[in-house]
Image (cartoon, rainbow, N blue to C red; front, side):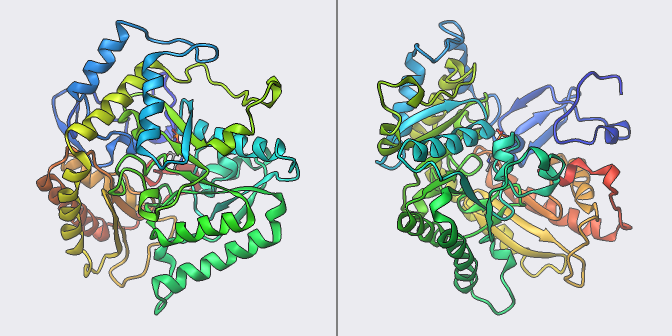
Length: 453
Ligand SMILES: Cc1ncc(COP(=O)(O)O)c(C=O)c1O
């Protein structure tokens, strides 16, 4: 490879045989190669894009802002777009979320939430609270703090010496329920263990952190809102914070603007990123309550939240975010998505009896299934058939990127019903084709990027 570029989440040696795909343009739900070949972006470019690539209204907002103010530090300064954005976010989230702290990536938002929660307890005369509870298979980012509450060994095991040990509770992922077990029995069983962990440790726990409704990087593993209701009650009972990481699921992915709406509860911290700027620019936000805010409000500088990133509250990103919220409002996006959600549901239902497919599932605009051997048995973990699925889909002009053996779609909202049908049909064909191929396996030396999110 002659390129000086070192790609993320990639074994670079793989690019010797299959170089990265060069994209030169994006428009609506499509990315375009230099020769004009379109690629339907069924995964919204790592789950960030909302209204389509190169949306004229978002483009115009950014261009307008570039002519006024491209960046100013946010400590000691403010500017209209970020003030407006904070206000708009407060308006569209539950009443108790009244404060917005901005950062520049999803991982950074998680760092902020963890630090804020810890400092809150420290400044509330409970300095013994130092630990967090996260869920098995949960993913919250890859900076050291966020990686410590992430449970995806592929990303964390190399860095164990740098990671603080926190507590981990069983996942509510419904695909793990036992034969004959009802959803509710399974959830109650998993929750009981979490309850026990908290009962035994609550005096030292700052917060429980979860991805509400969908554990994305685990392979779009889903669970219902009732679990989140139980969590809120539990956190209240033991007086610990509840952190919702809606970095992947926020801004309409689950069918509602935020997943928390389906549980009708308010977390103490709400982390947002990815769709915040409609996938245009790096920005994240941690929303919290006045109660938390007041614990930092003081004449003493050191009691303030002294966390900062150079690009915090960037005006261009804020304008992109405001333009995205305008699109939601003026184009009735969530309402319009209902039709797409129905289409996805109907098309996914057709896969239910497929011998190579199990655990067909959907939450709002996110659809997923696992592909298995014809005898219904899962493929071994080292089997790299996910790569074949991605290759097949790409040969049909569709960007799919299975996580292990989980095939999923999380399309931009400008997608059409026909395109959704086409994606699911191609995914089925890909599974059938991959099942015929001789076992491609990956050694540790060839951790194939296409089995990563
Ligand atoms: C639920 C969740 N939290 C946090 C992150 C980290 O965000 P970023 O990649 O912007 O650091 C991600 C990214 O995929 C995510 O899905």
